[in-house]
Amino acid sequence: MLNTANLSLDQAPPISIPFRFFVTAPLFGIAAALLLLFKGPELFLTRWSPFTLGLTHLITLGFLAMVMCGALLQMLPVIAGSPVPRVVLVGTLCHLMITLGSALLVHAFISGSLVGEHSALALMGGGVIIFFIAISLALWRVENVSHSVIAMRLAVVALMITLLLGLLLGSGLLGFLGFGNIAALVDVHLGWGMLGWVGLLLVGISYQVVPMFQVTPEYPVAVRRWLAPSIFGGMLVWSGFSFMAMQGLVDTRVTSVWMSLILAGFACYAVVTLRLQRLRKRRIPDVTLSFWRVGMVSVLLSALLWGVAQLVPAVEQDPRYHLFLGVALLLGAGVSVINGMLYKIVPFLSWFHLQNRQVSLMCMSVQVPNMKQFIRDRYARMQYRLYLASLVLALASTLQPSWFSYLAGMMFLGSNILLLVNLSLAMTRYRTTNAALLAEGAVEKG
Image (cartoon, rainbow, N blue to C red; front, side, top):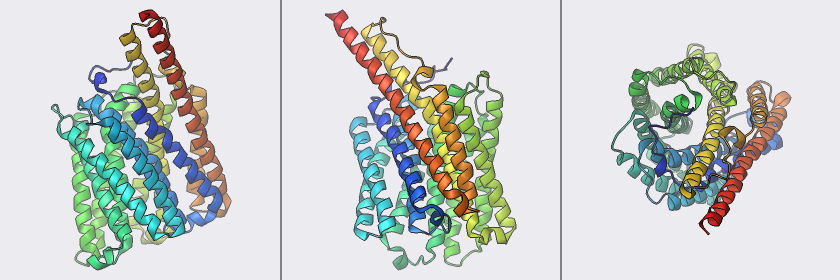
């Protein structure tokens, strides 16, 4: 049984708000897969290729950030009891601006269009700022501040730092500001985006969704209290030393030490999460667990690889190292956990909204599907296998691009198409049942 005792379910936004974000994410995943099929080995030669940059942003902005924005708009009122002001307007504007901005930015990377890049930055910047203001108002109105809320607050601040760094990188002003080492600043931008925004938000949300949906014990109090603030503080120090290293004021080894501490924090989180899953009360096989386990193992693999690179300079200087680390973090950790979240959040929201509608109409003659009926386990498991194959092949592509890249693209394409189908079927079942409830309710009132 789901434990919803601590959730403010009556304050949830209309289901169309998170759904539009969720269903858009696999469309960007499909675009990323098509780019893999179109360019293949070229994407794994260097991380500075325009096509590689485009692929990276299709995943980070189009897939990861899209789902995280939708989840935050939905879960903040539910788990914190603080609704987002004007949530329908905010959700509609942010979805439109971030979707168009992400697509334009990828096009600008590939085509080299400065007009497209500036338009993309304006749309993305505007969408993220609207999102930041609305979410911040809701977060700072929370009366009972939980550890999840603290992690969310820090993640939203990290989002704004990521945006500001991205706008600086895209504006061409860095040369005038004295930052000639663009590569180092790109690493800071990527670090705040993946570890600050996505990482901290996943940590905060997992404090709620892992015990609730996976029926595990709660995260240890020490982890909930100290992990997110420690990671955020470490990110601030690491960024400061990175800027100083760009000016030649400190040795780059200082920044490496701080990043090692940050990754050690995430590795601790991954170990604790895997341990909690082993202690879960419900032993029924669940595809969500498989996605989360792949994600947590990918976090541990990324932290281990980083440590090896710091000890063995030849590894860090190999271009394949950065590509392998990027695939492990983005496709392994980020995409995997997001998939696992979607397969629980979408059926739960569908079931919950229909239950509320059924009770409000007092219409018990229409049966509401249970959570398992919104997305069939067989199709979810099929999508998981396609995803896992795409991850393994993408990691192999960083070592032998000509052998594995096209296969990775095919598997990733199939995975995202099936994810889109699964989410669409869940939403169709929701709409069909909702229409039946409304129709039966109208008949009973008449």
